[in-house]
Image 1: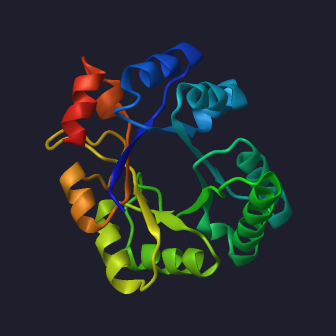
Image 2: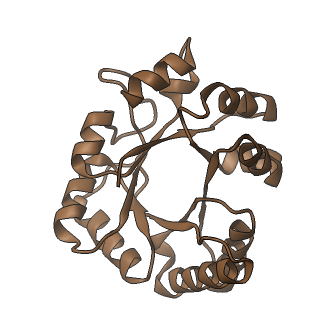
Image 3: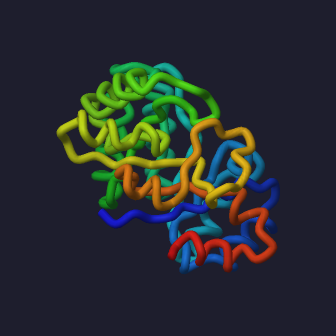
Length: 220
C-alpha cells in the first residue's frame, strides 16, 4: 500500500474547514475529522468533505460498553467514512462488537466497510514499545484493520505481527519543527520507512503561510 497523507482538520469552524478542503483537495484526498470539529458541526462536516469528492477519517476514538460502541460504529458506517478510530483498551468484547456492527451495516447498505483503526497509546504520551505491541496484537486479533501508533513503534509492529494490517501515524512534522504537545513525532521519510500507511498531519499545514505549498513539500 502506498503511503498517503491525511490532513487533520483541527479547526473550530465550518468556514475554516471548508477553506482547507477547498485549498488542498485533490492533492490531499483524506481529511481527519476529530472530536473538536465533529462536536461543533456534526455530520454536516462529513457531508461537506464528501461533496467535494474527498474522504473522511472519523477520529472520535470510541470507548464505551460494547453495545454503545457498536451503535456508534453503525452510525459512522452510514456516514460512509473511510476510516474510524476506537480505543483498543476498551477490550476484546467491545472491539469484536464494533467489527461485527461495521460488517453488518456495510452489508445492509451494500457499501465498503470503513477501516476500523485501534488507538494504542496517544502520541502525546511517552510509552514503552512493548505496551504498544501488546495493544496492537490484541486489536488485530479482535478483527481491527489496523492501529494508530507513532513511527517509532511502527517498525517494531511490522516485524513482530505477521499479518497484513494498516498503520496510521500522527504527529508528522517537518525536520526541526516544534513538536508542540506531541511527544513521539516523526518526519514523512521516517514514518514511511518505518512502515506507516497513513500519515496524519495538522499544524505544519494548518499554520503554514501557504498551506498548499507546505502540503506539496510533504507530499514530495
